[in-house]
View 1 (cartoon, rainbow, N blue to C red):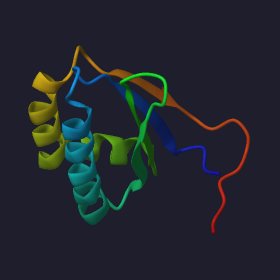
View 2 (view 1 turned 45 degrees about the vertical axis):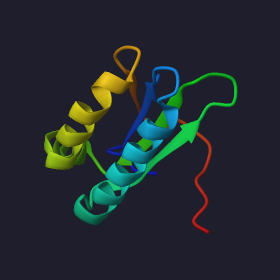
View 3 (view 1 turned 90 degrees about the vertical axis):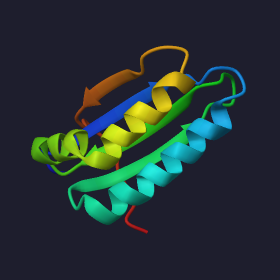
View 4 (view 1 turned 90 degrees about the horizontal axis):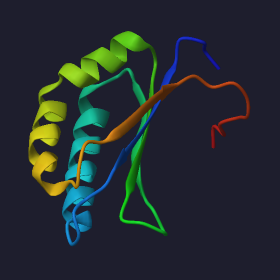
Length: 105
């Protein structure tokens, strides 16, 4: 575990009936992140079982990789496309790992 790695958890709440559309946009963006951002180590979404929320899990090699992601064209396009589909602003938490493990399987 590197102390430079940055973990991000973002919670987005789609408007009623828009969850699948937001999920599709996230999947498309994840492919672009994977193809164009070598500093992005993890990037995927989870569909909450108890609410309409989509939880985005991200991990970057360092803060420079986070900045590269935020400034990328595909992130800017995601933000613009998803904004009218959401009930409000996303909740974004930056964190660093303090324990546990990540399997390399």
